[in-house]
Image (tube, rainbow, N blue to C red; front, side, top):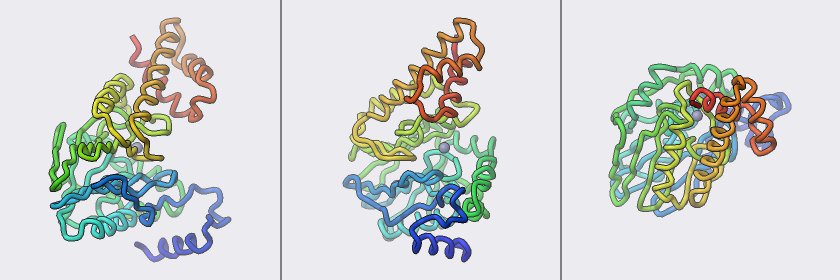
Length: 308
Ligand SMILES: [Zn+2]
């Protein structure tokens, strides 16, 4: 960690609040590794505490190896996530996978040593080739600390690539890694720990409204993805942001929302309305039920484009 960042973080820890100078900027996107908690026999998580640009980080520990899920924003967060992995896994082999290649999930991978095997879907490789560090540059503009965290960040090359599924035997526990795109991004990846019935769902099912973050994002595809997730019958969903959920409530919540967006938008298009008029009418119909208007508008635009 850079000295200036360490000093800033120390100051934060002492005051417990964001200094007045930084009051207008978003909270520091730091993975708080001290929040580590065990959620099942083989799974630990570090919750994001609701802080934007921080992911829920997952650790799946078997007899032979451990899998880390998501890195945090930039190498300093990646280093902290790696240190915790070493504490949990000791000398066992380490694997790393990310739920998608957005900066707070993936751009800490550089801080892991070469002995850690980074697993990527070919869709994630494609996302990196197509969009590169575009989003990282936007994130870096959010505050001085974001910029500092992302200063030397770049994508790490995969050690293992797979097209659709990658079953990973960690010794006494299996992680099923599945490429799900194009939902939030083309490279959306879920991790299913069947023995513990825990689903790392990425951005595919969370408390917050779904974000259509890629020009390839598809509402039709997302609904089909939710069917696949529901068929797993997870006991706990760890989304890539926000609180963990018991059962499949996040999945049914997303299905209800996306179905309503689709049906209302199709009706508007059939009635001859423009996409702008559809956004206005469907947004009004949702009212307070969809507080994130930008995300709702994004969903409506995709639904409009896909409507017959
Ligand atoms: Zn994302």
